[in-house]
Length: 250
Image (cartoon, rainbow, N blue to C red; front, side, top):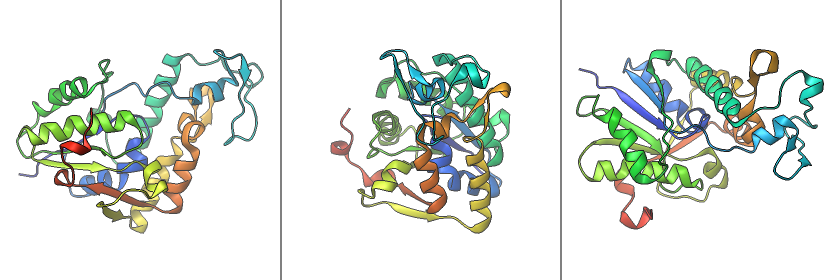
């Protein structure tokens, strides 16, 4: 029996930027591949960029990626609320995963409100309890710059340490790949065919069509990371025994 694979993704875009080559390989191998988004995506600064201003400061905001300031009144859309941003990000997430071969039935969205290690462990266990022993589990890495990535990684590492899961991998964020400051990782390079599918997935995050509810949140947020991925499509990952208690500070 071929065992499933489950990816715990903290934010919409992490699956493409940091895990997409692995997702493609599991799909190609015929494994049931499930993706679990375990937060709403957080309070990204892309909202202020898309709205053209920051209501907290009253200051206009220019998009470095777009090359100018957005004006919703002129461009024909209502300024986005936080819930609008979360919904738009979810659409990008689902569309990108479709390009990676993941059907809607295998995409699970959970709004974990307790964003601690304990809260993430509780969310993960909801899915671990549904899958057979030996299922592969993946998430971001304990050495990522982003604190929420690290908390999710620690949650999965502790579940591995305590014997709830056995097959675990941790994928380094694209930002930290760009910094090149980590050691001890393994590398997964892409083939030409994989690169094409990954490039297609990135298109979901740069689609701008406000009339259809597409706001390119991914590119308004981290355009440089998408560009770095396409310029150098290598991925970095760790096995769980690469880390010890001292690497997991929460």
